Length: 273
Image (cartoon, rainbow, N blue to C red; front, side):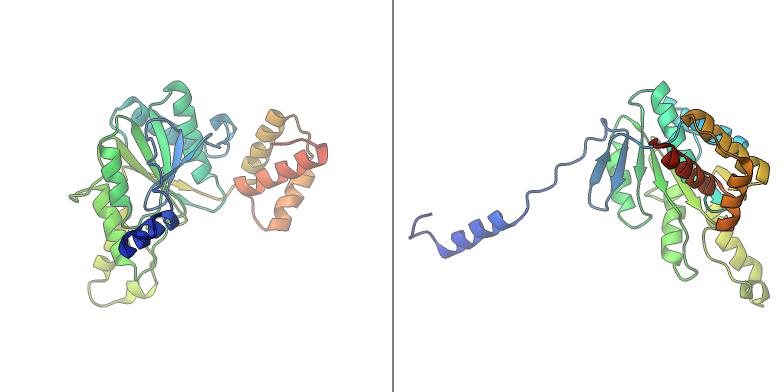
C-alpha cells in the first residue's frame, strides 16, 4: 500500500480484509441432506438414519411414511406429513430412514432438509422452487405457544393457500408431541365467546396435513420386539428381564429407551453401532 493512498481507500481495504468471505452457496443437487441455517444451507453427508427395516412397533405408520416419501422421490403427488404423539417413538428417525430408503431406490432424486418454521423458510422455498429435485423439509419437535399465532399462521400459509405456499417439488414433514401443534388450555372449553372457534383454529393447522399419523407409547411386547430387532441386526444377546428392568428404571417404554438399552449391550460387548 502506498503512503499517498487515499484514507478512505485504506479503510475500505482494511474492512475487506477483516470481513469473512461470503459463504459458498450449497449445491441443492448433490448432497443427501442439508441443514437450513436461516441464511444458507449446510450440507450433511452421509444422512445418518437406521435401516427402515429396523424401525419396529409402528408398522402402519412406517408403511404410510415410506410410501409417501417414495411417491415424492418419483415426482408423483405426495402429502405433507404430521407425525405426532408420544416422545421417543421414532418419529424423526422414521422420516430420516424413509428418505434414506428412497435415496437407495431413486439415487439423487430426493434430499432431506432440516429447518425451523421461522420467516426464513420462505427464502428456502424460493431457492428450492428452481431446482430439478424433490425435497422433504423436516420441522422437528414442533410446538407453538398459545401466544405465537403468527408462526402458526405462516406455517398454515406455507402448507396450503398462501402466495408463498411450498412449490410442487417440496413437501413438509412435521413431528410434534401434540396433534394440534398449537398449545391449548382447558380454559378454552369454558370460554363463553365462540369456544368452538378457538379450538377449531388450533386444529386448523393440523388439518392442513394430508397425512397425519399418531404414535403411542410402546406396549411391553413392542418394546421387546424393537430390542430384538436391533439385537439380531448387530449380533447382540439380551435377557428380557434385564430389558424390562431397564425401562422401569427410566419410567417408560419407547423406541428411544430400547435403543439406549441396545447401546448399553453393544458397549458391554465392545462393539460400535
